[in-house]
Length: 346
Image (cartoon, helix red, strand yellow):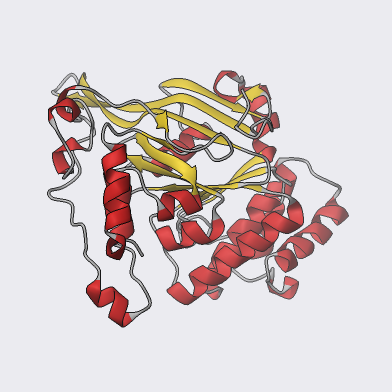
């Protein structure tokens, strides 16, 4: 499988499913399943950043953990650099793990409070048997310096660092194994706004310097637009829209994307006061009992009878050089609505 420009994808996700059983009663019988991820397809090219956005509960973090097999998939396949991650045995998975790393959301919870910054990074080197003991100690200092920390601070414990510094330690730990692919799972959401920009710029610089490939997960569309080459919009465990970040931002095709973009603030008081917000009615449906047809129809202003009965498949409304796929029966109407109501978009 190749992506549109003929370059082989580094990561291919096909019909990925992750369901969590719902058990009730004294005997804990399975009575249903929470469909956290319910059949997603993604390609990530070498050297690109794919943004994954959606509101809380859309399945972003579950998808990330399932791709790395931190959670066992319920179905589908994940092929990384030509190897099927979902079918790998424990030995093959251990060999793959150094090339696929993750930066976690909470820098307060993802670091062991009993380990110093240096020992946290050193553990990744020791676990993967990288280098000799002197080489590892030297490499720890290099990694901390790479992420903007003074190597002389490596004997300090996590509580002695700020949130942004802790996240830098987490990034250094992820880079210790020299991965090709890094998932940043809400890596900036727990940080102050001023620090968020620093971490995003750091990730961008590391990508250029080390040739990294990212899956960048966030609910902050402004940050996703800044760092991502392409953006995938997830709703209730399914991909609603996927295209270049510029196309998704400027020419949204799904009503859910249009609503998300209308909520992005604009740093211009005059323009901001004149914008119309598209407020979605109600709450997201229960992933254990999703609606029939299109999962978004219960909150959609464009919904018709076909949306309630027929689930839309992904179709490409872009160009051969810039595919732009969407799962919506009325994508053309949404595109016209967005073009005719520019005050909605940031």
